[in-house]
Amino acid sequence: MKLFVVPTPVGNLKDITLRALDVLKDVDFILAEDTRQTLKLLQHYQIQKPVYAYHKFNERKSSDGIVQKLKSGLKGALVSDSGTPGISDPGHVLIQECIKEEIQIETLPGATAFVPALVNSGFDTNEFLFIGFLPHKKGRQTALKRIASTSNTVILYESPFRVLKLLYELKEHIGTERKISCSREISKMFEETVRGTAEELIQHFTLKEPRGEFVVIISNLND
View 1 (tube, rainbow, N blue to C red):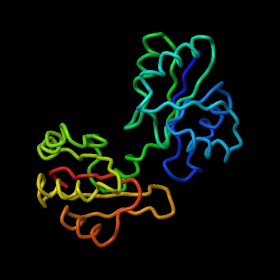
View 2: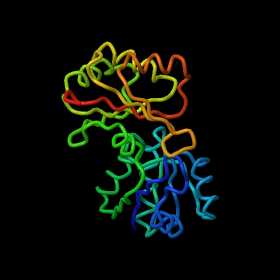
View 3: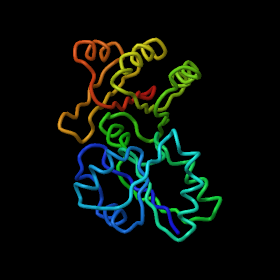
């Protein structure tokens, strides 16, 4: 009985590790955030395994049944749409339940969107605050004030539909002294990183429609 936590590519399918492929071929079943997305990956590498939906809307309800499957002696793999499960994606609820039930967990190293974006930003990487997606409503202002008050590099995730709103909010809270790096479509054909102040990035993405998922990096106070 064992749960493997398996990172999947954030864009280019070639970024999956050989070890991840071996695990996906060996397990008895796969838990996927979006079964359609995962099936594309599995079909590309000619892997045929039962795939079950495991996402933020059913993770608490389905965790008990998954734990029972694992306790029966089966091996399962948990994947998300892209990147590492549990990092701004479902995963921690099932992992907590497996720990309670003394089910072995093995997390493979692999893709996480913020790492290449952080390195590519050119900002200080010694200390950073990873926040991921900001709350849409309740707690959003508190989070923005926290960003403004920290001296460390800050990492955020944002959708293309809300990135301009985020940049306007950052302009209000951090002003123009700190630089921002916006990376989108990481490892894909149209990968792009744009750096500048909040005002400069607002101008850029007003003229050029934002597309793809964004990693937004805010420099520390010394950069």
